[in-house]
Length: 209
Image 1 (tube, rainbow, N blue to C red):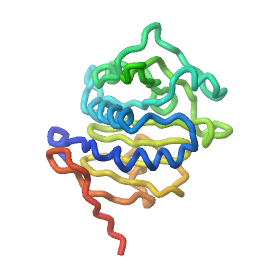
Image 2 (image 1 turned 180 degrees about the horizontal axis):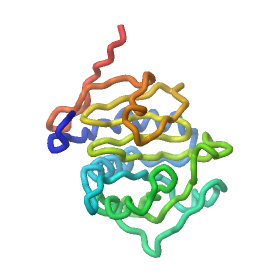
Image 3 (image 1 turned 180 degrees about the vertical axis):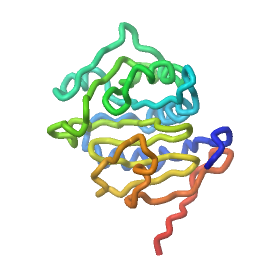
Image 4 (image 1 turned 135 degrees about the vertical axis):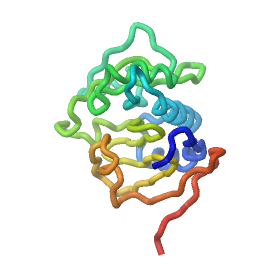
């Protein structure tokens, strides 16, 4: 098991991730490449924190309140004032949100800064009538120190854990439990090697012949 103190986040992940999400989203809400790269780094850093002795487990929903209002399957509790989307803020808010059913809504200011504007309630995703359409926005789930997954619609695209990145095929259309790593690691993932200590891009180590 990797020592969390030695884990690094490779910013180059977004170079591969953003084009894949762009192709899958079909014009639905998607952060820019710069925005996505920044919020991934923030999310990764948040997973390394503890709040009141508890590790930080959370889901970020990259969608604004106006876009959310167009979707009837979810409800929201906007904050009186949005707060900066920072690792320490996520750690503070995470205990109040069950990451399977309640997400921290993230939007970007006119100046391009990410902020958390409120809580997004989706309930139990397994009972949504049209999950594929209903959750058609980018979600970042922090589930362990140094570990997160990126999803949109009924698709998992990336899991970064323990310094390794795993990329999922486009036809991987089921999402197992987000919070048991043994279930996250399934046969649809392509394995990529860990980042170097300086946070360089991950190395391709697929065993395909």
